[in-house]
Image (tube, rainbow, N blue to C red):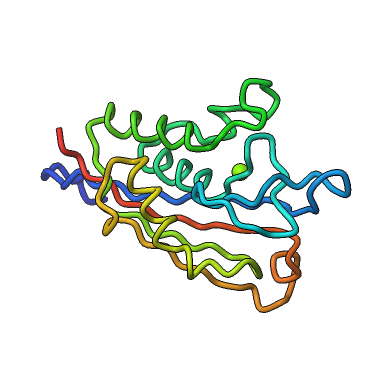
Length: 176
Ligand code: MG
């Protein structure tokens, strides 16, 4: 006989995972790379992300982690890259939408853990600006946002500086 379904109340906490990757190219006219922006912070770098919006892989992965936790459509479903209104859009807009959806669902962010993988530029000098920006846009304390920078040890496309990759895990708790 299978165990009966558990009926005891469980704490309403939700884990979410988000992932994003953007190809990096030289800026026009040599390539199609946009300015290199991560978590809303602009880095002076000879290559930048190719993308329909501004190509901010951190904001995109954070959005997907939060929506994953809520069981809502991901960024590609919510904001199709075929729609002209998202072309070149500042991805802070998606963070504002994510914040509103978390709030509307009656949840709050417990914490976010973010891993950015790129060979260059070096993220460490600007990490606190990045986490402060994420915290501000989501309306949470900076201590709830952690960001780690890693390289890809010079192997594969990310290690060769041809792409930037981001993983995010978040935890949400019901507050209403
Ligand atoms: Mg993206």
